[in-house]
Image (tube, rainbow, N blue to C red; front, side):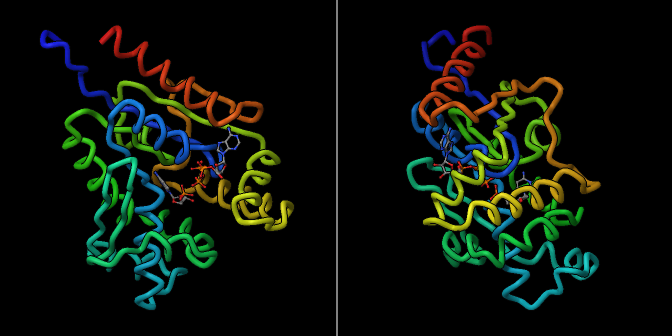
Length: 228
Ligand SMILES: Nc1ncnc2c1ncn2[C@@H]1O[C@H](COP(=O)(O)OP(=O)(O)OP(=O)(O)O)[C@@H](O)[C@H]1O
Ligand SMILES: Nc1ccn([C@H]2C[C@H](O)[C@@H](COP(=O)(O)O)O2)c(=O)n1
């Protein structure tokens, strides 16, 4: 740019559960002065609302009928990402085992995806300096014209070990099974499944530290900016 300011950059980071999307995206955004959006938190928030309002999670028609009701607001500062539903801070409640076990069913409903995708595109469009958006379908569906697409992977063993460490010693085997089950549901749904975009850079994080993954993504963003 003529005035020397960096051009806005849109970065899409997708991948299965526990590959390091949130940790990496937050750190990259903070380091580069970009906004940050955790799209999983939005799907968790709408799931929390469905559960709280007694909607039958096994009934896609019932979910679709009320998908437009909750007002979901995401704060995109990587130093303090926030999520509210109808004005209530739900950052804690959306991480319960109950929400985690139900989020794949709710997020498979096309009306839910349409609603949340619209919110995501609007937040990306209004991020003045650019944004790092992480999820499952960002590079394929939400932001197909993103400047950089990354697809993070890691072995199920590494992901389970990371998650059970985070959950203060939860059983690694059952954590591994739960991750695999959720990935299978997210990858096999009809609408906008978890998938690597053809033009995404795949980064296997199994043998990498978080710092190495962050450095890798920051370098890739710098390379994209250099040719923009
Ligand atoms: N490369 C890495 N090496 C070791 N631990 C890591 C690495 N990347 C992330 N972690 C740790 O793994 C856990 C899961 O990471 P994170 O929440 O970023 O993954 P995620 O892909 O966003 O998962 P989900 O999709 O389930 O939200 C966290 O405790 C994080 O600190
Ligand atoms: N772009 C996205 C992001 C998330 N989801 C769904 C599927 C996940 O299992 C769930 C929770 O995501 P997490 O907090 O684990 O990142 O949300 C999706 O369908 N599309």
